[in-house]
Image (cartoon, rainbow over all chains, first blue to last red; front, top):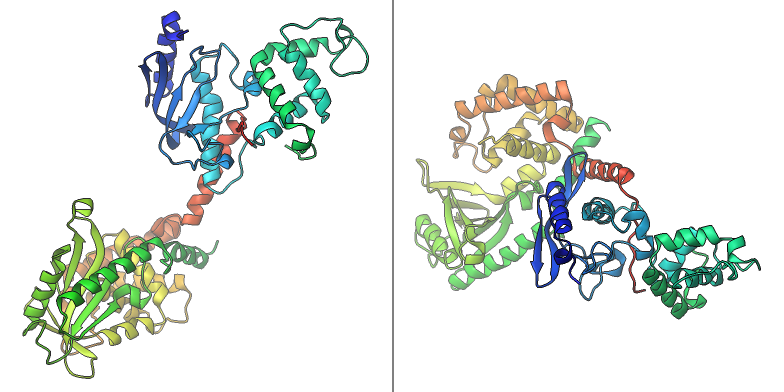
Length: 228
Length: 300
């Protein structure tokens, strides 16, 4: 599947919008992959606060899939504490499960650039100045997933969180099933609306991955007392 | 922040400690330069020492040079018979590794390899010969001017500045010179500061600077300085001619007016600390209107 061939109008639209907002970023198609490369400006009130050399590898199923982001100037240390993978320099901009808040599926690429990506590099500049992460940061791995669902579902009970994730990862859910909150009621009589809403926001694929990570980590790997 | 607190921050932001990258680079070059000279004058008993702002404690980050003296003992002709020869032989020796620019009594070193072509290393080598066995006074060759020989004394120069009690004012005056592109030799400026602040050592730094500029504004025409190493022999009047004096007076007048109308920051700008605080504040404001997004890493 190559989104740019399947939907050339979308490709042209994305390209034009990015060029209008970020004139130093350029679309390049290599084989079947679309890259956006160039100098990414961190802006505030019309002023460039900083610049980063970047490469965005758009997903084959763009805009459904998240882009892979690399900081190509080697300015940010490849260290987990800076959210850059040492192996390939990939930047971990956001937790996929949180995507609906930051760049909902169907949103234009420019919204990703002006939203989470801009915040990611603004935060990197802030940290470089010796300041804390301005928006906070999720803990790495399973712990970060736990923190996210703890805040979202307002429970520190790992068992309940995995129950919910089971329902988010399921192909479909039925109203007569037991509610994931485990209060003994049926889903339709309890948290049906909440589960439905979350299933619309969080993709099955992301929920499946998070569930697998949490199950593999187990409760012993998760410090449930640490505040976010 | 008071004027003196501000000026002290300016000085702190201009400080070059021994562990700074700039000084480490200079020290590395100094070692290379010394080796190059000694390798070329194996039979000569040379005295190679730091001079200039590094030795005087008046270095500013914004504009600094490393002066290295290379003096031959009196009566030693192995590095050249005349001062002219000593100067020229040093130039030839240094040219093996550097592009050498002639600069009065000094030899300015610049890069000549493809990687550093034309790069100014901020290093001046000053060749000379001690006048006698006491190794105090020395003669330097002068490539320009009427006199081809200049008598000087490094220790007297160093002591004159180090013991002046107005080192901070000297450093600020040097910064003022650079910021205003004033074509005054640094040594002459140092002598002027010391002379004009002779009776003002106990005043605060801001008062000293205001006095210095007031004197320049009102009395630059009558200003003269003497070389402490050779007060009667070295005429420095050509280093402080009428044209330069009027430039100094105009710059001093402008500076005093800036302080009066806009405060001290108008003279030396924001300090590093102030700039950093301003940048952090802008980043904070930018974050306050940005999409709150937390990074995450899949691997713990």
